Picture 1 (cartoon, rainbow, N blue to C red):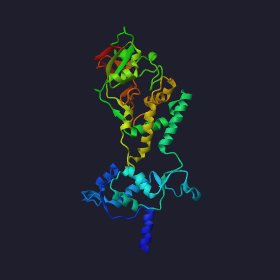
Picture 2: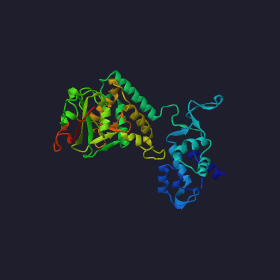
Picture 3: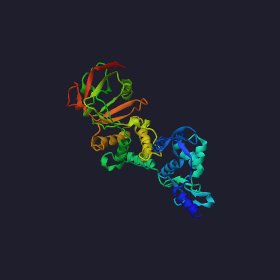
Picture 4: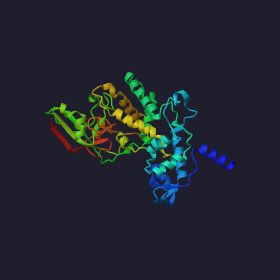
Length: 381
């Protein structure tokens, strides 16, 4: 009796019973579980697919699964209100063990083998009713987006406040760096820029075609009126769409190259970041920030339809990145890459360089961008 009493106590404490089967890495679709089995397993026959592959004890894998689940979910008993008249726990969603395994965990584990899923279900403690951790509170990404919304509203009401007044800006910048969205560009990677003008006008210099002088700089997505900044794109068609070329009689375009490698925040990479596994102990704390950043990227890429105050949140964010933020190695950013609001999936740039940083010749080391005069083209609209 003492043995089984101790066993039951052990199972209750850890949340699952013993099981003596072996499972291979190919029986899971999740990359983190696969890597765990490859690291801790040996080449032997899997009890589920019956193939000889890197396999380990399913009990060990369930330990990883339950331990990981406890980082985002918990037992509803003790953290949720209960009312028998209302049918049980109240105020938030809950999951019995079957639903938790089949509907919640298997979205992450990606198991197709029914026998394996059944064994995991039968091994978990069936007395537990699961719920989100802190079921009555906001998830981190929800809290972050609420803070971003409060920031955007506050900036529009009082645009003169300092960037250091808004902790959300530092938080967002840190998320972006942690998710490896800061990239180092090649000197050979240029940017197109287009300038609309009257039919009879001709422009052929870097200062005329590059970042405008401060007194001619209008408000844009990442810069305020009177602030000179270089806006460009990876192709001419996108630059034409961004400047609404049909509003002009003629447009002159040219390619500009950096005089050094540029450190850029690439917001376009957010869409392509693969979902982070619940079972990835090193990176799962970035799951909620990633959800937030995907919403953040959509929000800042929306067209503003000429309403200048709608630019204020991104302008102040740009100011923070340009003047305050430094990477973990102490480096400052040179600009931002972002998705065009006019042509989906096309990449634009906003570089933190003004009209005085434009050069007509490649070997001018005191400037930031030089024009490739062979690429200058003038078209009539």
